[in-house]
Length: 53
Image: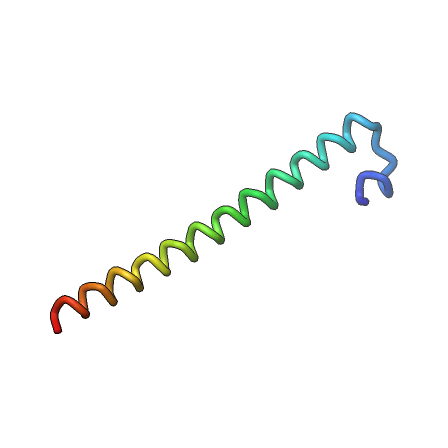
């Protein structure tokens, strides 16, 4: 939307769209990876606690 508002050429619009997509995908991937690591650590702790009892 910003590309259209700024009057960019088609190549610039494509570049902006690709850059934005890469940023969103990377941010989402890092967020998911952090959540999965947190869940894995919780499962490991639960498993260790169960073995101690």
